[in-house]
Image (tube, rainbow, N blue to C red; front, side):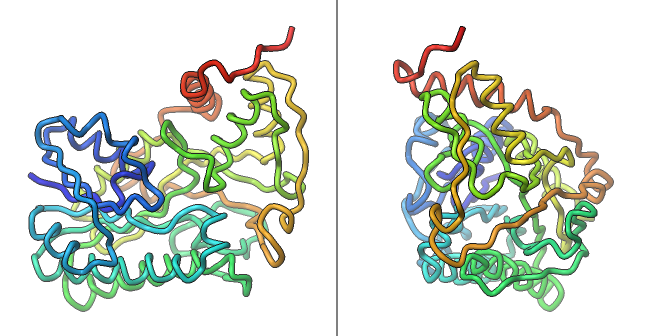
Length: 331
């Protein structure tokens, strides 16, 4: 089988391509490298069965040719990262909505099953006020800030995919990723774990946006990849939406303290107002933790790594990446 991974040079996409290749699948990655990086897949370039195609999901011809050349499609190509989304809302909406439309059209034309990668951001402003984990059938409450253009674009992606399934019979699976963490994740787009780890190892202040009471959960990228691969193998997942994440909750302040303690460095933890970090009008999500019972029932999913184990791996990976720039531990 040959598999198309759009956005396959990105963080999750590159790990997915790597895992599928290890299973013996042929891989075609389509990526314009706008937020992905060739460095994420350079180790795969000479592997038999791997092909990289430089191209955009906004290019209908490139998408059509790529889908036609493959048997199954994982659509992870998107504008990502809180900072990029807030600073470039037009690019975000165009890339996410038009790109997904192109992929769905091509999959329908060529009769290809497709996974659409969505996001936990879709749950919006936490209408439950932190009283419970998010379920796939919960209502969505979106604010008026431009910060929500990403969530809105991904919500439209989901409705498009569900409409193609209901109206045209296209086999689709939709996954909502919750704060996935692992090697090759860049701190450049506002991802909190790689940012905190890099700051701590460089002896810089760990910068917490807002008061740090925001609640999150973090998932090892290998677990997220295993979940989506399993979902694509189960007919019962077609036409359905699944949370992919961990149910273990932690505040951002607790996360900063844990990383500081695990690195053994005396980095100061400083708080930065959202307005200073992102500009005026930014709204954050206070509570974002998934209910993964539907995923567990459907494919027997369970996270394999605890938060501490995830952080141990991220600290080790970042130490190696930074090399001689890493500060000496205290004491």
